[in-house]
Image (cartoon, rainbow, N blue to C red; front, side, top):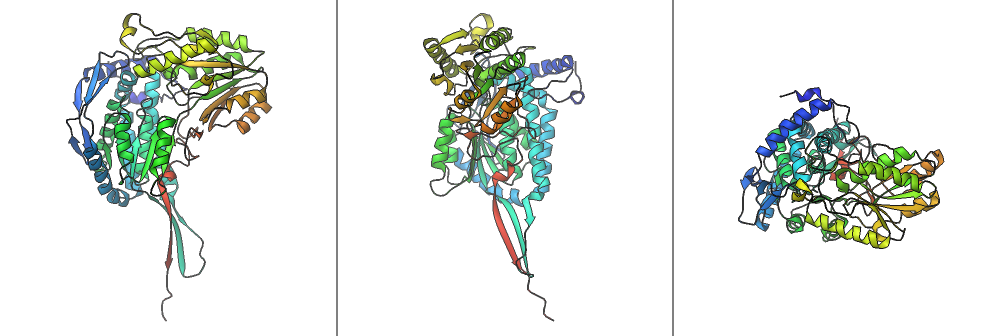
Length: 530
């Protein structure tokens, strides 16, 4: 059965006002196509040309079933990195000279192609990353919206060209923002399309060219983004894709002397190393989003039902593998029992299994190292406090073929390092507090500052929360997700402290201009002789 995709409303991370029967029918069709396309070999693309090497390729397997090979992806050596950077640099002048409106038109065509292919893209992300159907579709929809939002920023600002004051009658002063040149774009696995499309499209619309490295755990989705930009008509060399294993290739890209800027989403450890080393010769733009250890606060006046629902969704959506995921909760002692019981009941009701299948909410972790990190953290929680549920690897039936673990909740003393260490694994830490002041103080103890949420019936507490919490993305009384669900143009996604580098985030109104540098232009017009 084929149903026109244009009849379906948009799916976001927090709203699904769609005909689910129609949605699942379309997803089922796309899933069959995606599985049927598994196992192919993929090159890199540099300057529009397919490139392969004799280096050990990436064998992309599904975390749902590690016996399923999704594809074999050629990996770069240093000479391919050099070739890609040179191609991007060679294309940079022409891409910038193409003009704002031409770049916008091409990128909007890319957004339209994403919407045309969204079921294919969502199906691939579901089996490649372990996303539920709705999460995967949200990722695809957000990708298109990010491109449209950033192109609109450029259009609304008239290309960031502004007339300035005249100091004399014969001068004309213009302020312009101009591209830096070549950006390295290094993407994570968890939002393999949305974050890749968002970072790259902002750089591209600003007039920069790209050397792009998708996450080694999601190269298929990254390759699909390359195809979208190619099919939209981007000139050769403007967007180059190179695959490789982790820091071996990522480091080679941003360390290349021909790279003018870096946009990176990933771990704080890697991001801070890039930040420290990238500007050794002179300061260069380094746009980093570095994860979080996101807190939710549940006060004594909270709607416990809404709090339990919101925390569960943000803690265990995508198995807590979101930089915005709720990983710690500070609960007022007078409602600890009621909240904990409600949270556990909702968590036990989660549908666990193959997330590409209908109505499954919770799937596998991305790889074996994530499982090991989860197991170490759960062992620590048992030693320091009480593990209220979870802590096991799931090996029954078909789950034995993937990286499945049970959602875990622990009651811990506030001094536990689990409250401050980013795990990127489904272990939620609960700490008991006796006052609002204590809740804020504990929330702010972590070196991260990405997202945060509060549940309170007090307007004063909510206002103080917004003023005093050290986080860039803040929510109050949000049932659909305590700390997750940001969308382009609705919630800017800005990391504070160890969660970001610039103080201006993606999804927000100040993002595109960060990919440009300011130039003042003064022209003297001599008076015409009589």
